[in-house]
Image (tube, rainbow over all chains, first blue to last red; front, side):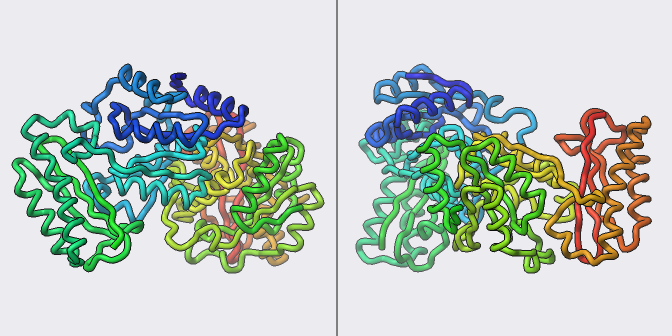
Length: 281
Length: 281
């Protein structure tokens, strides 16, 4: 497995892969891999002849008071895990490589980025779309793989790819969960044992949402109420948002109909967790 | 010469060119060709095995009170001229093809777009960088060709290409001028005979700037004064800006030094003309 630190190196790798007639898959990550990341890499391995994983904790998508400095890192372990699932190249650039002096360009999707995580993390999605556009331009993948845990991120990236005519396919894969339903996240290691137990309320609240919809409930306010009440009952849970929106436009709904997402962000202590479920009503 | 109306068609053309081992050159234009456009196409013809010219009057880069509706058009004549210089494909999409319902992404370069044309045409460069990013993604050229008449545009696009790691080379070519020095522009046809005569003052003021610098003048205020006085002496000339800035950062200067640009935008009646000259001091 090749480890590339510069844009020139990863371009070279891709050029050689293309010259050999290979399709290229990209899995953009911030590292500290869990089973969710690995499921993306395995899928890329199945569909593409050459698999690139980018590993970069992008400062542009973190707010000034967020957890950039303490974001978990273990490059050696990440490389071992990636190698084991058959990744061909890791692209792990420095901040200087990604944002050299004088950097002053951004890519922004408007409209669907002013809610959910976009509301509580201003500038977050501008950072995401800018760095993902850079990665797409460097790797020029045929397919790029994203998890559905960050539903909004996947929708925003799909929008960017369509709007800017980026010639690639965005593949999204289901959220991978622990046995008790907690969505896998690099941030789960921040949770103390008590928080870890309480955090299962997120998945349970999404299940309660699905069951209420199946029973015929269509009122978004009441559905939201069911989830909020459940989460508020968990010790130490601080709700940042619980929303039910249309997919893919992320518009607010009074009565649910068509494709909808129930999405939430909840803090346990300093740790911010997100989760969601998409339903066709 | 192939005429493509959709992104799918131009992608197909490029795919076939690539499969035949050809390099691809792109000349982005708004049509109504003059010798300036043709010089870009000829240069592309010399350096690239396949030459694509995009012809699209991009509404996103026009302000609400600008000349979008009356921008000159002659598709038949443009095609004949392009064919004659050996262009392989014209990409002339509709607005609907470029900006379908729900379009909501932009590419923006900050810092250097808040002056010169960016100041008098707010949002103009956001429109330029967004459409050029789309064209680059559709055509994936090895080289893209721009004229130096819009010095700021060329610098902004070079910044975008570098910042977003677009894997292509921006080639800029000298402004092509009429015999009396007026920079060629599709907008020159708006000028009545009197305005056309007076408009030569733009080039003459740039020459006066160069001569003053050669004589040893380094004070940006005095240099600007020479140009402003000259232009103000022409009948019907309304100065929008006359600026002397650093290259490539477009920062204001008191004493000129290094690479500098003298840039101007002047109206004759409703017609807005731009011109500039770059010097190494």
